[in-house]
Length: 78
Image (cartoon, rainbow, N blue to C red; front, side):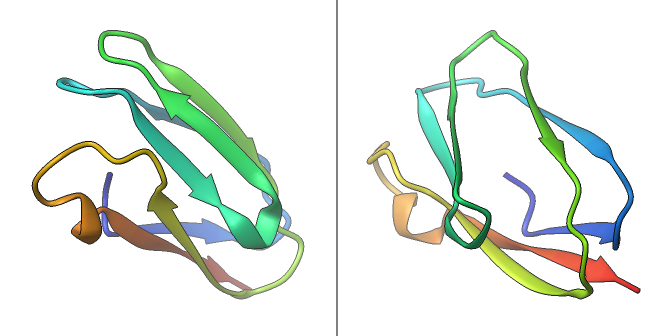
């Protein structure tokens, strides 16, 4: 996962994510969204965040070494 994804407030986007090794879990708690990232499959995550701010996301499926560093943030700009 990237460490930071920049969006504009109110803009509808689709983030496409895939895994190359294990099944990861992308969890965006503040938006109540969770997705499995299955190796070889493209997971499409539709988003529209109405307000500017910073929203954290993380991998919530233990996937091995480095798991604790698999996190990032959505930077939502006005």
